[in-house]
Length: 120
Image (cartoon, rainbow, N blue to C red; front, side):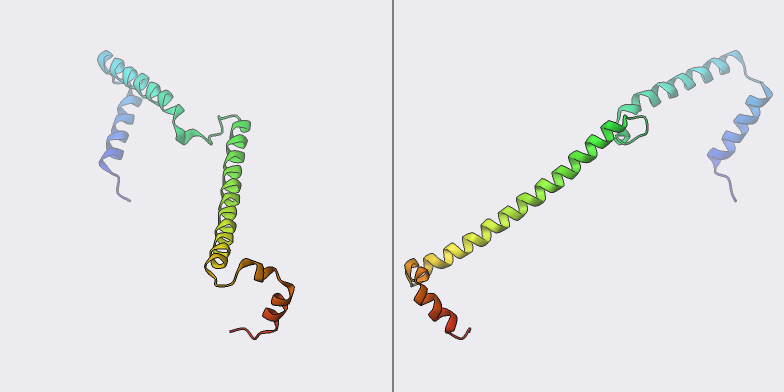
């Protein structure tokens, strides 16, 4: 298995640090770089990607999950209501463009006659 250049550099640096051969300037720069890295890590903790991290309160995760489920449920209900309205509108359009008056469909004799006719 071949080590990348970054891995080789990291190992060389670790050996140098283990030997304790740092100058005061190198030690100061290393401490400064560590502080910068820690500050960067703290700033990144508030990103949206951390929403479901274990550090968040479980109640928050549950609330977000319930909000998502409610959104899906309400979206499905709205979609079904719109489809029913569309079907109803198609029926009403068919009645309005038909040659027969609407009262003909209310007549029991006409309904019996329609049911006795073969379907085409």
